[in-house]
Image (cartoon, rainbow, N blue to C red):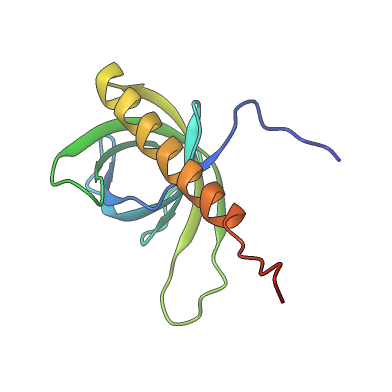
Length: 127
């Protein structure tokens, strides 16, 4: 298997807004997963590959936003017919170190909780 990933990915659905730097283009985004180097998101607005995005996102469990900027490294149209949505890969360029650590902790906890739930299969050995 050809694995090109440099960093482990953690599933994390986090919503927010983006603006393409130095333009008026903006929209909504929802992340799919994060890694140390970047994240995958679904955008509601078409943008160009290579664009720099300034993002403001909010963790589902808090009202506190966090900010990041990143470069779009790939774009794929989603298969949805009713709404125009676009999958994008974003390489992180800047993020406050404290917010980055909070994000990593949040993603790891979600991942760890999902792994624990998968392992909690009940068996009845008395039957």
